[in-house]
Image 1 (cartoon, rainbow, N blue to C red):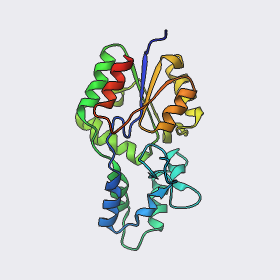
Image 2: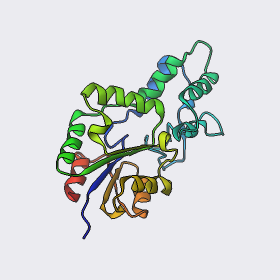
Image 3: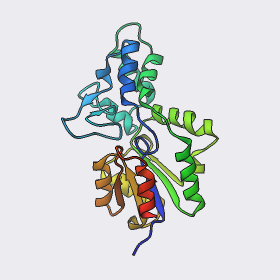
Image 4: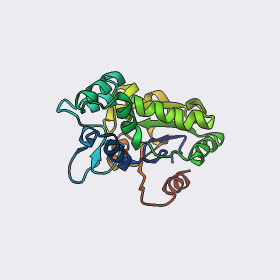
Length: 227
């Protein structure tokens, strides 16, 4: 029987609490059309890492420019310029940044401490997230640096979609992560709050586990069950 040596965490919804309502509230306050950031994907299926029934990673135009931003095919400057071109006069780039980052909720320090504890027990920990440059830089500044952590303190590898130019649930991103990690897939536990991403990981041989956000202490329960 294979044992778990590597734990791969999703970011939004698993380690980081999301505040999807925050974008709508910020847009209303700043006079930005929230449809620039939200597009209904369908009536039932979530898209990406950001929520249920709506995505912050698709929209603005039929060219799916925000999806391109998520996989690093568009810079933050290009993204902001594009959004600004769809806004009313008087709205600034600073307003757009504030609204865009409003979905970033809390990242409780106890979750960071939990990762440190896992590492002290000999487990390798990694991050695999669909995100974008602005969100990632804000999260690092707000929750890692301010808590005295670096990515190296917490993760052996960080795989963020805009840097690796791949996004879940495409098989290629799991293959890329496994090559970099260097451990057999069957020794890797992957935890994601989006079921389609967990199932995709499972198809590539990892222990892909869906984290049910409605269950209290679901993350600790998963780790306890596997480790």
